[in-house]
Figure 1 (cartoon, helix red, strand yellow):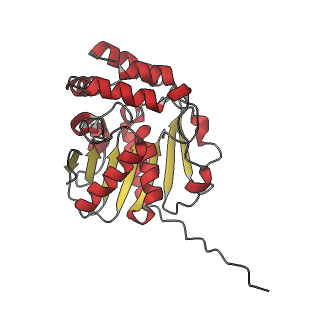
Figure 2 (cartoon, rainbow, N blue to C red; figure 1 turned 30 degrees about the horizontal axis):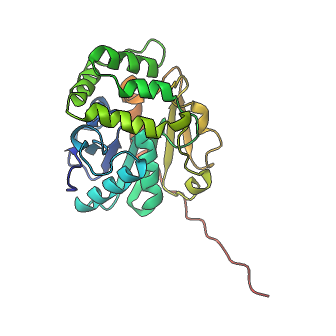
Figure 3 (cartoon, one colour; figure 1 turned 180 degrees about the vertical axis):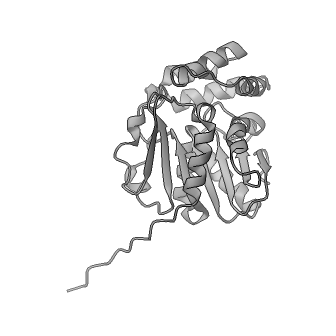
Length: 267
């Protein structure tokens, strides 16, 4: 496998589902989602470069670095086609992977994905970057969640353990500063997304305080958009069973027929 890139793999099903967490997260945040999928489901939950057990991945930070790293790792695992799921920053990574190697992505499920519009809550993410104890991590997660939602204690514990590793907080701060420069994020052009032919599902909470759900407006017509009422940004923690059902549903959909372009005949 790719050196210094970690993935927690389980299950032996014929469908491989790849899970990419958001900024400041780790592979363990998918635990509730994975447990809601069929027991035999083959899943790979990655620690993105610069996070958790992938902290020391070279040049970690940019989504494009993570996209290349995960694609290379999947090649080394001899997984020719996978169902791809990404949350927040992991959603941007997933979209870039699908654009770079569309023939290798059977379906694409994006949960409050980064990269679809310039607006981003930079102050909240920079606060989250520096959260060094359980109480501050919890406070940030509450601020990023929908009204009345309490993040699971297990998620807080997992993120706290991750941040105790030497160099992790410094790396998260570095990534946050680059990602939220001028309180704007980089945007993937919608005309590029229109070229994707695999089933695409975009899921967004209507109370997202990190990335506004209106960034799902004006996406290509073949993208399916699912709004989760009164949910915030942390969909994997707030609605794991719903997320699992949406993943199952999207993996069963058929790809859009390839559109053919016809050149005008020379006169």
